[in-house]
Length: 376
Image: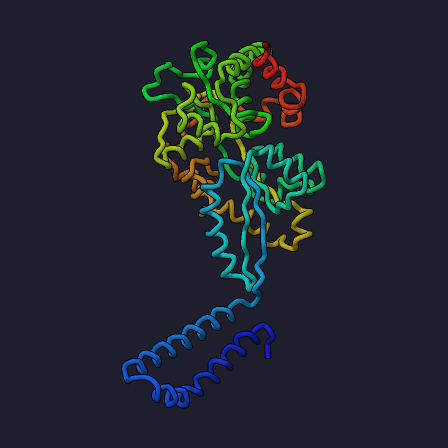
């Protein structure tokens, strides 16, 4: 006999043994119960036997009762999309494999999530705000070189742009990035030291100057004025949205486009504009090679990553405000995602290594700007 089906066979044996005793038990019980109570006893007994049989059958369908586990670590603004995508993927996986799977999820600021994985969180798949964060995991030996080629679209799973949200009727008259430097504008942003989205916002501000003919010195002066106007510098993009929408802080919010769209889906609509000089935000995904080999779940991890690029998953991403990378889904979005006339990329700013050293390392440009904000 197949050992995997032994519990089911054993359960059936005991159920049949009980059924064989029904005539004798019925005679004995009829001596003590009235006719009505006797009938109720027989019905209840048979119902209990039926339930036991059903439970035994359900148990028998699990050829391996221990599920295969996978841990997804992602950044703060993605849960709504992944909590819809993951059940879709698991339904397909569990239909095609004898051993069922479960996916555990962890969300937080992209920089914080990266450090948590480096400090021992057993992530199997990371989907982070910056390719730079995944590159850090590669440098520490957790991910093998060449991870960009292991998934479609160079492992860029979603895109976005930076946006500016205003109060109803735009009382401050905000139209472009340059308007954020006005002295009477109070701004809500996230902190680039902790938030991947905030780094994109910082680079959007800087590039709005350098990519339109301005000098680095002019970009530095403009970006500093914007941060001098900041009344909130939150730890992540979601917290920035909550400060602006729920707590009613600030005149404007600088954040991901997908955060603005999601706020509307959650009955918290905000007026926002997409500046025509804008950075092409790209969000990457990768398998943590060291951990999947340790956990024995590489097939599951790689299948999940591949699923994220399917039309089904990309449609969910688009629904929650992420610009899809799958061509058919992208072409079906109509004018939901405005075209940016003057886009620029990370490469236009020198690439991630240069950007990190210039702007975000200890003592780099952002630290210098931040130091002036709190000078007595």
